[in-house]
Image (cartoon, rainbow over all chains, first blue to last red):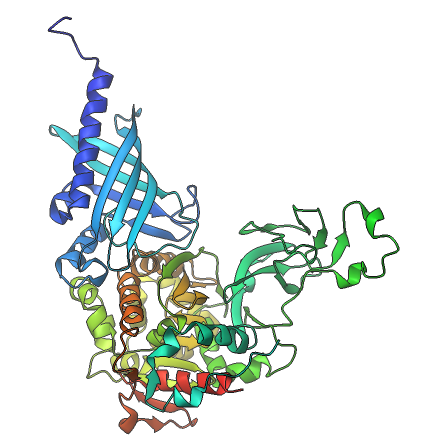
Amino acid sequence: MTTNKIIPADILLHHEVSQFIFHEAKLQDEHEYDAWEALWADDGVYWIPANGTDIDPEKEMSIIYDNRSRIALRIRQFHTGKRYAQEPKSGVRRVTSNIEVTTLENGEIEARANSIIFEANLRGEFTWACRYIYNLRRKGDGFEMKKKTVLLANNDKALYTLAFLV
Amino acid sequence: MPVENKIDFDTLIKSDQVHGSLYHNEEIYKEELEKIWFKTWVYVGHESEIPKTNDFIMKSIGPQPVIMTRDRKNKIQLLQNRCPHRGNQVCVKQKGNAKLFTCPYHSWTFSNSGDLVGYAFPEGYEGNPNADKKKLGLAKVARVASYRGFIFGSMAEEGPSLEEHLGGAMEMLDRVCLTSPEGEIEVTAGFLKHKTRSNWKFLVENETDGYHPAFVHSSIFSVAESGIGGLYDNKSTALTRDYGNGHTEVDLRPEFRKFDEPMRWFGTTPKKLPDYVKNMNAAYGDTRAREIMIDGTPHAMIYPNLFIAEIQLFVIQPVAVDETVQHVTALQFKGAPVLNRRMRQQTMGSVGPAGFLLADDSEMYERTQRGVKSKQPEWLFLGRGEQREYRDEDGYRVSHATDETPSRGIWRHYRSLMEE
């Protein structure tokens, strides 16, 4: 076993991206709203389509299609303490896995992953399943989110309120 | 099969109080299906959702799915999704274009007007007098009628006409269409489907409850630059109105007329929508166009399931005594592409499972549903503003924006339907 084994760049990138995704997941699970908001690029887009995975959000309804200022508004609403759909806050824990990382031609990084999310709220206990697509840009030692797409496995069905950060 | 009248609704509904069991009693819910959902006029869909010959889309009447088709003769049909053979669902696609529906179970095939056009291995039916194809088509919703593109269905062969049912509320649908320079709305942006563990009547009542926004929605009013909050303030000049037959509205026009600013209803100005204003002026003349752009679209609850919330269209669907789906989309006005884009953006922000407004409304529906199961005080008090309610020049009951005139009207109508 060599002690100075060079880690190939793609393995390092996969590790870095995975750590970023786990960090983001933790901030969401723990309702660390401001720290989560700080992960967004100035041109960030947070997208949760409805009725399939290939709709045009400029033409059809999405569950969330937030530009950066609407992400900020979402966070400000939480901070009022009167966002009743999250007061009391849901108990949330997610497991994110199956992470695949690609470097795009423009230098941005695209990561895809699966997540299973457990949510407990006043209504009861619920499980959500989704595919995440992250579009990330290098920022300092880490990354910033240019786009996060959440493809809920049941987004063509009637859904209960989804007010925690997914 | 008529339902035996075991429940005495007279003892459960008073002019200003309703009994909590009305929201959670399973027997009452079953009776509502027969006496309201499977009998009276129910909104099903909009003509613009099936624009081409042979288009179809899956819709519902209460918990029951209905296939809405535009048949080969361009007639709108509402078909029940149940094969007359073994009861299988003949269509599981959400929408599409099809001349025929073939049941996958034994390959019975139906036209998009519901007629049985063929069954597989027909030899087995030859000479059987009961296997008459004319009698084995898909069941249709007995009556279909539309007004300005809004399609309604009634499963009762006889009853009041759609015009009689809508009555004075018909004018609210006219008002929706006026906001289009071409006088038509379109439903083309797809629906969000938001489920809530609550009885459907809590939703219907909430839609024209002008008392709750100041509290349930204070979180978003306080952080967004929105003029909505003031409309539902204690000092607001807006009104609630009961049109009869369960139809109600929050009439925001007095507030908008007070400010006298076109497009204020949409939180914008004519300068930001120059093409729209030009087209409106051309369509209606400058004076009338200005009035329309000041008044805005209505906040209208057409009983029992169509809610127009200024910029959105909701369809309320009960699926169980304590479960309801809200189908919601952005209203789209024909000939107003820039306005429509903003309609979609605002709708996505406000409604659906993650909406700034509707997630909190739904939270209230669910807490209320759990709340009314507590034994006491048994009754809900809906008396707000009864003492200051009056009749407008058309004879409709009117009161302050925050008064419970709509709820009382809804329950008055409900009682008349359930006692029939």
